[in-house]
Length: 151
Picture 1 (cartoon, rainbow, N blue to C red):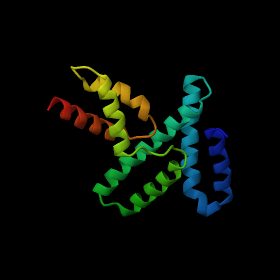
Picture 2 (cartoon, rainbow, N blue to C red):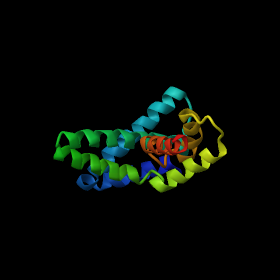
Picture 3 (cartoon, rainbow, N blue to C red):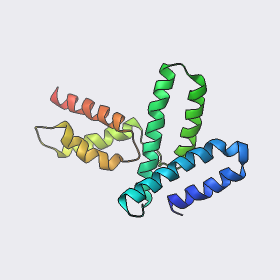
């Protein structure tokens, strides 16, 4: 079952759940809307990889919102965003731990020769972690590992 089909099936289940499925329904509708917008703009059918990218983007938006709400001590909005993130988590692959990211970065660095540039490392690491790790975390790990090499 493709990710789009899974979203449609889950949307039907959320509709049947009425009040209990309200959050899931709104989140799935937002994701479906984003998918439709991209399909219309690019004039093509999206595959699972593209859909996963959209779900990851929606998750990133909520993570950023969550950080801001925590700064502002908005407990009501924090709970809502966390519930939305729980819904989106079902559609994303398991996230890589910092140790796994560090292993990928060190493997890439071992293949490279001096001078090592941040952009070159990120260009090789990001395709391996796409959708499975936060870009900020990858960036931080890459900076730390380059600093170890450069002293």
